[in-house]
Image (cartoon, rainbow, N blue to C red):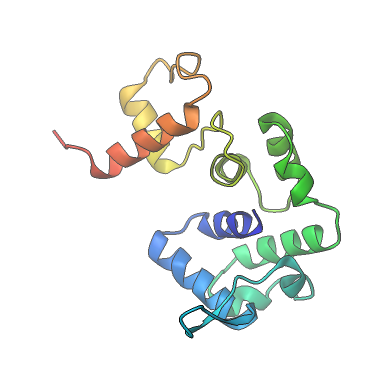
Length: 169
């Protein structure tokens, strides 16, 4: 869950190529060196303890920009025990989202993404720019949430995929 949290903190106002580069930089600079079963060296994802002692701007060197302080502060909250991600992972969707919103830099969309992709709460429905535009275009009266209760996150993914790769008319 830690990796998902950091990845979505980095994803804010960002694109996939840049997000990958930021994560690679973070792993290379602060991750533990490991050897794969095939004998290949790689860098693991740094845990919260590896980042908690950093200054808020130290991750700027990893191209995180203003997100640097989000990641460092979240690392401090997790490493200190102020935020217990294991406890959050056992919570209901509503409780988990509420708890995640207590992390510096975590807003509605990031909390929804973590609930959906890390905690598998299918009632989460992250709304980013693509989804917002799709909802305006196709669901002017509002998305029928009751109709898709229990699988909102699945529907969100279908909408997202279709908006990016569907047939354009």
